[in-house]
Amino acid sequence: MPLKIYRRGEIWHYRGTVAGRRVRGSTQTSIKARALEIAAERETREWKSSHHGPESVLTFADAAMLYRQADRSTRFLEPIEDYWKDTPVKQINAGAVRQSAIVLHPKTSGATRNRQVIVPTQAIINHAAGMDLCHHLKIERFNVATKSKEPVTWDWVQKFMAVSSPHLGALACFMFLTGARISEALDLRWGDVSLAERRALIRQTKIGAERRPHLPQALVAAIANIPSNRETSAKVFQYSSRDTAKPLWRAAIRRAKIKPLTYHACRHGFATAMLHAGVDPITVAKLGGWKDAKHVFTTYGHAMTDETLADRITGQFSGQIIVKKAELG
Image (tube, rainbow, N blue to C red):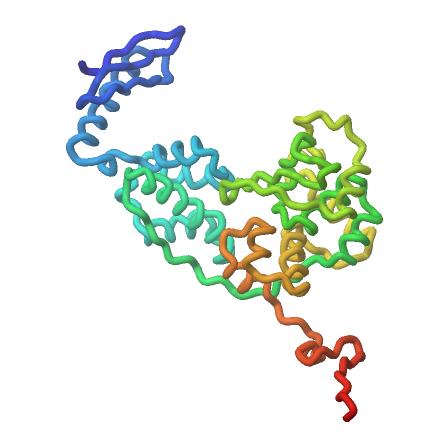
């Protein structure tokens, strides 16, 4: 039967069967005339989808809603959703997406356009494509000037912790020793931490997975020193967002008189330190929550400056030479 509207409280809803498929939903309006229009539009779309396939009616707003419902990262989404609104996904091509990045960020770098527009837009459309609602979309990224990313070191972290509040110092320590992203660290709850087992549950929203890294003893001590009621749902590091912590982060750097480095430099430091400690990229990627070991190698595999490293090949370390004495005949 065609879609019919009915009231639930003040709001009109619709329900019925179109092309053999049960359809129901809310018009989100209390005005009957508008509710009838919305129900008619939905019915038309359902018939069109039945005859010409789902891609014929899928809008960017629809795809974005599906992406949100899948609990994917919502960072940077709102400006993109406002830009495309109800544009049919089939009309969105790679060139149009690149142009949207220029319009939304006219004075920013290619890296910012890639991160805040290209990547999330492509993720939304390809998520819908994974549900067979449209075709996958490949988008060429903007050129990015290669910059040397300076990693945080353990010495830097210790100096930072010495002048910070317990929870701010522990935050830096946690990111450096587990490789956690700032968003993952700030979402850590007391119920996710077991100091006795030296484990923590990190929900990796960026890649839709979880991991339970080992907590080195120094990190266990730092977390244990955080004053808190430790309710299961309470945040360990207490900050509501990265922006809330940022002024305090910068102030601590000034007090410690250390090089100003970002939150992400801690994650960068984790990867760099692990690689320089001889841990292979595949293991580093697994321990730090990277999808691709190649990304770890190419992004964080900086060359060491010690020109004597070749001595390790023959067993010579720190000025000591290991020599097998020939047996005397």
